[in-house]
Figure (spheres, rainbow, N blue to C red):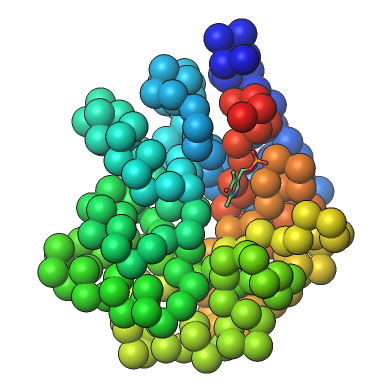
Length: 223
Ligand SMILES: *Cc1c(COP(=O)(O)O)cnc(C)c1O
């Protein structure tokens, strides 16, 4: 799949679609950053995106990222890596060493562990709180009812460098109300970043205020 898939072309198409969606929403296209999601894809494929100028990437597993990214970072020191998948507390040390943004902060035990490791490592990746906007039992993210209190604790108790919020709406629902909810919650808390929208719905997310869109399949093909 990846041998024949033209990464540079698809990347350019996605960027065009982002710009068009931003303009349609009366927004500056520069206010929406593309996080290219590279999970399951090998370094050779990722290098095609790097060669085309892409510098912001997302991975959902710490172990996989640890195997792929140190060599890429050595060649492209200005790239920025986002963790977009669930984080276990026993992987916090590796996550803080490797990632520049942790988008999946979703519980007090994790927030506390992140705060402690940031202090120890003297490295402070930006954090986003993941909100389970659909309150799906199997999904990561803080429950809607607990979101306000958890966001406040991340700031005041754990003093994390909190930059915004992230969500993954339920597969079987219109994502628009979920994006709107995340945007409202971010505004209410004075948080700048809203990470929402994937290959199938990033234009809707941009209409609802996304500042980060996480796109994999539309750039790199099916996994
Ligand atoms: C895989 C993944 C994406 C990208 O999904 P695509 O549909 O391939 O664009 C975005 N966000 C998260 C959290 C993911 O795990």
